[in-house]
Image (tube, rainbow, N blue to C red; front, top):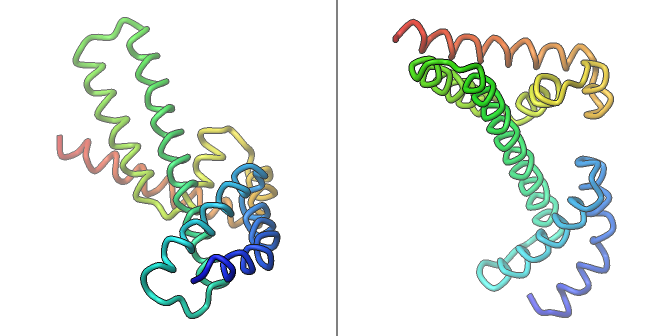
Length: 170
């Protein structure tokens, strides 16, 4: 793909791609960054295989980049949650065995959350870690309140099952 073709694609699709990402992320800076990254990946890819539908490639790339970003955010927040809990346990003057057991439980919790689908992880994070109500989560993600409740029920069941499963094996 020539620079001229890429420039034309940018002029034609940058604003709509940015709007698409802004609608999904609700973060103007993130939307701008992911828009640029999507075009950068298109430019890098065009040196290799031929891309038949460049706009579709851009939107798919942008969607994947946003999903990757959300997963990283969830992991980061879950890691921070684990660190906060661990500091509380250490501050209480707990024994080394208690601290080790707490670390293991936190790791199991983080692993269980990481196994959830991305959307369920996001809902879990917003509700359980950031403290948003079901209604607030539903409004932010533009889904129904009952959908939030179903995702949370599945998430909590999975997390509890995984944590208890390991506890029973120990």
